[in-house]
Image 1 (cartoon, rainbow, N blue to C red):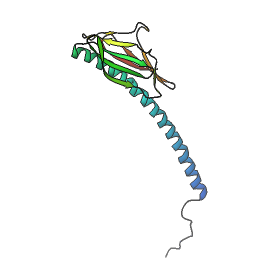
Image 2 (image 1 turned 90 degrees about the vertical axis):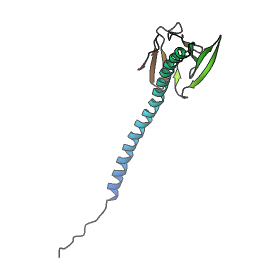
Image 3 (image 1 turned 90 degrees about the horizontal axis):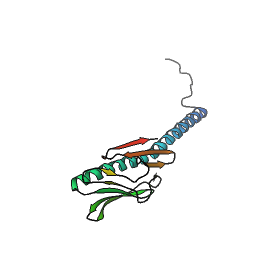
Length: 153
C-alpha cells in the first residue's frame, strides 16, 4: 500500500486575495467599456432615427401628394408634419434622449414637396444636423432628393 504524504489541499489566503484582486480589475475594465458603449448607442440610435424620419417624410410627401416637413423645436426635439391645406398636421413628435443635444435653431425645417424634393433653411449650406452627447458627435446631412448621410466625427 502506497504511503500518502500530508499535502494541504485548497488555496492559501494570499492566493485567494490575488485572484479576487485580478477579478476586480477585470470587472472594472469591462464595466468602463460597457458604460462607454451604452452611451454611444443612445447617440447612434438618435442619428439613425433622424435620418429615417427625413427619408420617411419624403416618402410621405410623395405618397400623400402633399408637402411634409421636419420642424425642429428646440435642442432635443422635432416634429414630423404633413400639409393640410394652409396648415400643418402633426404626424409625430420625436424627443431625443435627455443627454443628446441637436445644434438646430428652433423653427428650422426640412420641407419636402409632393415630388420629393427638399428645401432647407438658408444656412448652413449644405444643411447639416449635428447631434452631440458628451464628446461624441454625429453629423446628419440630408440631400435635396431625400438621401441622408450620417457621419461620426
